[in-house]
Length: 398
Length: 94
Ligand SMILES: [Zn+2]
Image 1 (cartoon, chains in turn red, blue):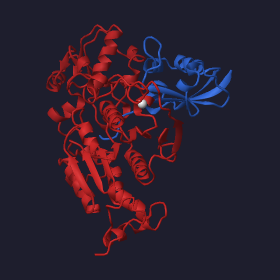
Image 2: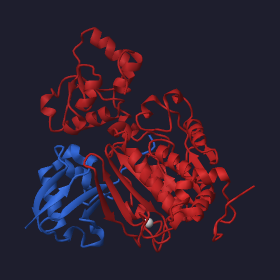
Image 3: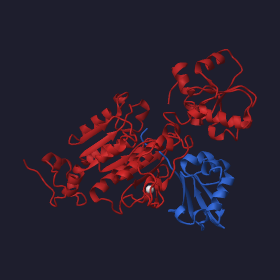
Image 4: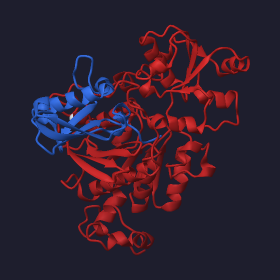
């Protein structure tokens, strides 16, 4: 059999067969990759955390480019609302494991790929063992606890962390955890308290944004494989992307000598409880402490009282664009304006407050109580989505 | 006094009357932040702790430099500077 091998022999264990030579020919004829680079790609092992918005373009491009071994960690199932941006998953995949759906697409694209699927949540118990098997980790997760876990595990195991995160139409990207570069904790020593920064599920995300940022991540992964930790990498730079303005800004990052994990006297020398670090106790949802002790109303009870024409004021604390999707004819004051516009409300009147799923309405009730509202305030349990599930199946869900 | 631009990140625009940037007059970063949180009081609660300390998940960059490695909030500003408020965001998998 004819095989091509690296001239320098730096990745001497790998070779390309004729099919691979043809497949990667546009790489092989450019001097920046060439046979040597392509063999480095084939020998590389990249672990992708998350098979969603960022993970989709990231894994697709890495697989196409010829990265030899790709690990993917995800425990989720494809949801209909994922399809607007998670391009690994197609309409018939709704309800399937994201890993199975991703595996089909990636192997169809490149059967030479060695794909390892980890159907699990990344935890402090499994992260270090998992990372040990890989050269580079790419973080495409969606919560602060996992962000800090990935960072610390990368620093502790000496693996670069190719990072991106997104919100609405803005993204951030960098490469953390290299030998001399800063880590995520150098940039942000602590996470925000739960509930202060909205998630994509609450805040929305422009469908193309994970595409833009995931491709930037893939680019950085490939550069690390080809060239190592050079000054052309995003190491020590935070790239800010604003898709609507189409502006790319760059901020300087420094390694913090006092960083608790990568500084000169580290205090974090093993993985910790990241839920606790991020203020989330046990398996509780961030806001459940706030919701606890607050009177809740079931949607069926609200329906009964509305039908009976009882005197009950309905306050909707979502955003106007959500009200346009579906509403209960409530009075609309977005949560962010509740204190400013509380004068529109009768503080002595009985009220049921709702949002999409019950978190923002709990915050609104806490704010109204703070303002001295005396009327009974009920939090609509499960929000308008519970109404769509249990009372009015014709209502669109979002 | 110098005229500088303060760039507001998307997650905080709900507290700045939806503005993406605000022009303020100031001589230091601290004064610029004071000016913007006085004009938009809701921003203060999200950017500072009750003790008046900048929250640990928010960084301030004067042009492209992190003020933690300059003179912090005492860092002087000059005409045409841009002060970026850069909070951590986490989205990506979902
Ligand atoms: Zn660090």
